[in-house]
Length: 179
Image (cartoon, rainbow, N blue to C red; front, side, top):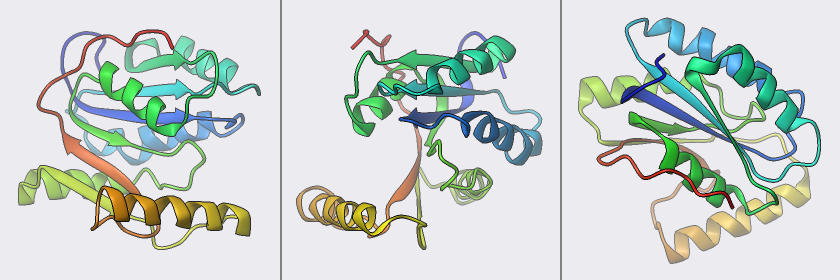
């Protein structure tokens, strides 16, 4: 963990109505990932995508307690998960970047496997696909539609159940403008 310069790993966590889960997400990252890689410099970037619950307060509390390794970004309104991820990527200082859901659907420990594939097997991009999700039928239908369109229009090999991305960042973007 560091407050200046490049870090080894940036974890971007898009947040939308996730009050009550953010402290657990952060603690799980620390215990399951960062503690396993003691020499690693890391940061966590929470991007609140216009939540109107207590998510932002929870992020601010985490930032106050962990100022060195945590960045907090707040959108005035909801722009969508992609915008939140892009804002986090622009702010990221990591040589490697991982996107992780705020609601606990993605187990943080998977990052250890992703790091192993990157370091030992020299993969530049690592994708972890979900085997299943615990969601309502409405959410499953809309998610399937989204991933169908993504596969049809952009990324033919994208796993049907979604993914967590890990990649080595070649260039760190500029500062995020308030949206």
